[in-house]
Image (cartoon, rainbow, N blue to C red; front, side, top):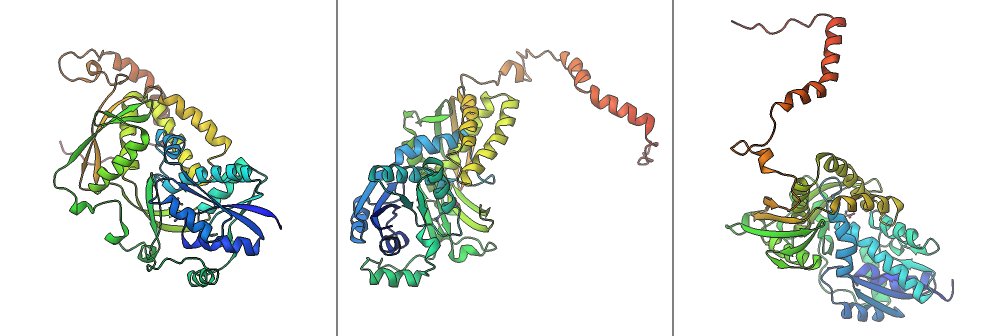
Length: 411
Ligand code: ARG
């Protein structure tokens, strides 16, 4: 493999820093690093310097926050995507974006492989590998941490031996991942799923008990299934997300404690903070309930479940996602209007919704004056609708043994 090039997804942390000399040594490869800002707290220039100091031949950095919001989060929001009904898929959604940039840089640099820092136990390796394969079947994917079998102590020793700056601060007991759509926390005491997560595990959210005593209302304006305004001001999706992570997080909204089923068969305990994601999905669902017919809502729920699962499973770049997206998009044209959400002590509740496309019609729904519903027509409807049940019961009464003696009624 002499003369070969590899493009490494580089976070600037210990694992991916150690991966640079390891790839050079073990794979005889020239390492080109790529760091993508998807909303994690990051100083791109500092990371670029660290990659070069760790031995990268070239170091690319990219702010992809807007692309992440518009091309990955937006479809997930239109799909109300929640894995196992609770996790908005923050980490899972960022992986295909990063993989797409790895592929682009690999093509530009004439590299034969890409690499990532994932271990062999998690979902992220599946997502990086499958996203890469789905875009560029000829590229090889290397995962040093899946091969090297080093403990954290081994890694530190390896880093020191190779002149790589090791963070002086004592490592946090938690393993975290952050982007615009949420923050995930694993390891340490969280590995005991019977124990309540300690307050220190959370960074984006105020403890609901300590949240402001007064509720705060946010008004979201949607067009075709996506937010376009907040509290009366036009806003990009990216800005709405950044703003809601702050405001909803301050009210303790967004905490998730998930006993999760990983792709690789392991059950794990995952803690998340996803304030904006939970508020936006709740608001979007509320608006859909107002403007979409019952059968579309019902069918869409099964599509949403499948959509969330395929994101989790690393199948973003797949024909199934393309096909489901076409269905979802076709449902969103009328999903426009306003939703009010009340943030208070850890909860985000929809308190009002309004749309020019509302199927809610007051003169049909009202029990007061102005009712235009034709009550008598219900009788004929129920006769036809109930015919199968009536026939079934009539046949049963003729053929089945007499009903068991019923309760003793007193006159
Ligand atoms: N369990 C979550 C998922 O699979 C979060 C993974 C976090 N990844 C990480 N490398 N810390 O999407």
